[in-house]
Structures are given as C-alpha cells and as structure tokens.
Length: 286
Image (tube, rainbow, N blue to C red; front, top):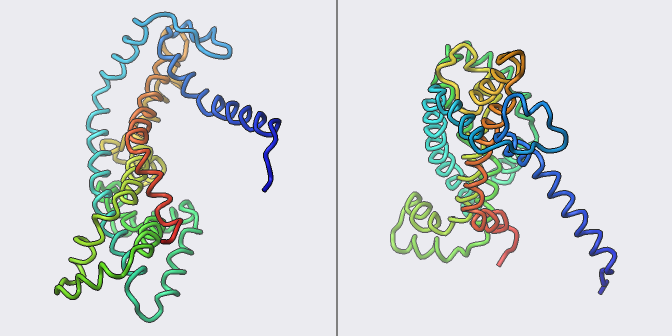
C-alpha cells in the first residue's frame, strides 16, 4: 500500500486552497463591488474596498425598480416547473425501460441515445432555427417550452440507479396485478429521490442561466425574455451605455451579477446531500 508523503499532502492542500480562491474571486469581486459608488469603482485594483452600506442599498434599489425583471423571473420559474415535470417523467420512464424491459434492439437504441450526448448543442441551432422559422415558431413564446423535453444524461442516471435495484419489486408488483405505469411511478419512482434531486437542480440551474437559445429564437420578441437573457441586457445597459458624467456604472452591473449567482448557490447548498447521492447512486452495484 502506497503511503502519501507529508509533502504531497501539503502540496495538495495548497493547490486546493489556491483553486478555491480562484473560483471565489469573481463572486467576491462582484459582491464587494455592490458597496461602491460609480466613481469609486474606478479606483479598484485587486478587490473593491466597500465605501458604505448606503451605496449597496441604493444600487440594489435601482435594479429592483427595473419592472421588466419580475415578469422575466415569472417566465423563468414557469419554464422550470414545466421542464422539471416533463424531464422527470421522460427520464424515469426511459430509465426504467432501458433498465428493466427487454425488447429487440434495446442495446442499439441505448447506444444511439448515449451517442446523442456527443453532439454539441450549438451544432443544432441552425437546423432548429430553420425548422422553427418554417413552422412560425421563431419569436413565438411557445418555442420556449417545446425543446429539451428529453435528456439522454438524465435517462442514463435513472437507468443506472434502477438497474442497481432488484427485480423482486417488479415481480411482486406484477403478481399483485400492477400495470406498467403503476410499477414505474408507484413502485420505483419513490426510490429515485436522490436522482430526481439531481434532475431538478440541473433543470433549475439550466433554466435560470439559459441565454443562447432564447436570445436567438426570441430576439424579435423582447417581452418574453427569460432572466438569463434579460440580466445580460440589463448589465449591458450599465456597462456599455455611458451615463453619469461619462462613467460606466459598474456597481449596478455587479448587483445584477450577484443577483444571478444567489439562487443557484442557495439551491445547491440546500440539496447538496441529495445531489451527491444522486450522482453516485448508480456508481456501485449491490
């Protein structure tokens, strides 16, 4: 058995601390920047030095007075609820079929599904745009709810978890006369809470940060922009449109940045345990 030396452990800890600092630096920079005036931000070197709590309150108040934020958040949360439901349904159904149902071409179908993960999403944007434009769905709010209803990655996670569960649950339910849907959603579904937590967390973060797709497909209908797109446009208002005596208003852009960071961080902290359990659920077979 190889013993790790004290010098190696020290180096590992140093690298870990250094990596954590690098990851937290942008958040710290944005957070401290909220406490600065528009003029004072231009004196920042390594990290902003807060000038006063009143600047933070004023900066937040100016952002909260942007009334377009609230319908955008409502739209984003509506998309999350829809995709959380549809992705949970399709992922559990697909995962169960590939784990417990035998049919001709099962392995081929599974490998084809997995191979779809190798296709970059940006490679599909052009054909999707042409297809949706032909169907008059570009700039139509409906386009925000009809893509992404299936996830090969989520199906794989569910499949791996269900494959590690014994067939006795299925056999006992079939003896009692349970049908396919009953077995999937009343027997196996309650045992998939950790994986479902992963799906919900990833869905929320994906919808909250969704930028590229709505920015392209809803470019001509700015009243239906999710918060991921609207937040960038609000930041652009303060970073690229000079105001206040010729100075760019970076503190307000920092407020919007922190606002976008907080919800995903809170969600992850609350469900961190379930998230880790879900990712490792299919890693060990019983």
